Length: 466
Image 1 (spheres, helix red, strand yellow):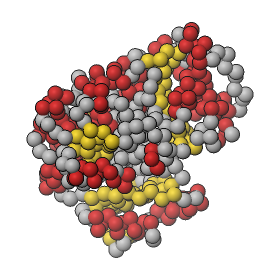
Image 2 (cartoon, one colour; image 1 turned 90 degrees about the vertical axis):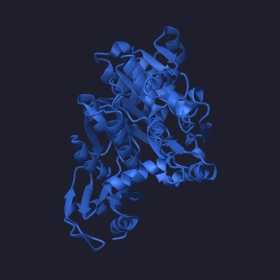
Image 3 (cartoon, one colour; image 1 turned 30 degrees about the vertical axis):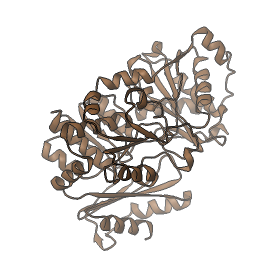
Image 4 (tube, helix red, strand yellow; image 1 turned 180 degrees about the vertical axis):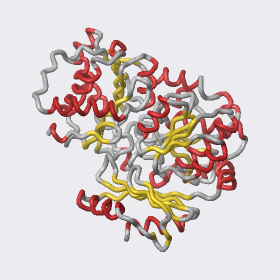
């Protein structure tokens, strides 16, 4: 039923054949076209791309037809592309917007509809709100018939197939020192996670070994999210076969995870801090820093040392993106592996970030493990873990209500402060706990940071078992 269409933190996501249907997708695309038809860059059209999920290409064609039937030029990807590719082409071609058919890191039964702004990053919240408002009107009426088919629109030139991968790789080569990486002889293992990163790096750096780089819309039964629990083969292979760095990207390749030479997972908090240190100390770059509500306190310590202004945002990269498009931001990111850096598009880009880590290792002439250890020696030990618990709406409301009230202690640790920017974050000495309802899935996320895994686990136990 069309009335079940609901936008979340990064567009619309739903279960394929349940709510994510051709009819509902046509309505969302039509509403998007209605909103953008008066955009100042609409003569540049709208860019449409798609990931490696089940029927993503067909869904992208349906969206393209719905938009093009409103007289808007559509540049449609000629193959599977990453979300950053769509964002980049949207910006380079002065398009009014970009659309990506993807459900990112969600389970394989989901697909989705992401909206990108003309600046090459996630559409700002008020932009999404205007599309939602238009969608509300569309859902109340019968959808107008599509006067022209895909083939007719292609023949008229209203829909044009475009190649995005090579343009992305050409752009990448101007921002990353690929020759330095090659000459350093760093052995790189890339886990594509059966996502949209397949067929990308092998075109420009064939020496990088890739795993899970074939078309498999079921993701072999594993969620395409670069977390330690999903990267078992990558972590085992790293230590067994003497690779220097492991890189993993999610379903649409905008998020990153990393593994060191010993097979240890390097989470996004540490990647954030490693890159911040590299950009500021080695590259001599400066600017503000933006982090989402669930990112490590180590970032705060680094900003204080470097004299950089720190902005803390609600969760969702779109909030970081706004700061990147409106001001001078050195680096901004979120806990889930999405980071944006100065000199690139205001967008998460897992492939770009992975190569930037390799460039950092080549210039610093240190292993990934040594670089992480250096961070801990400078700023103290910071451990982190997140638990996602699926539950009913009633259970979700009960838990959120519990933490909205004053909490005096967690597992014997006195609560010394709290913030309620996005969910409920409770601070204890040398640590914190965050409880937040997901904006895209029927679950609650429990996050904790501490100076030891013992502290982290105690905080999580207090939240999930108390």
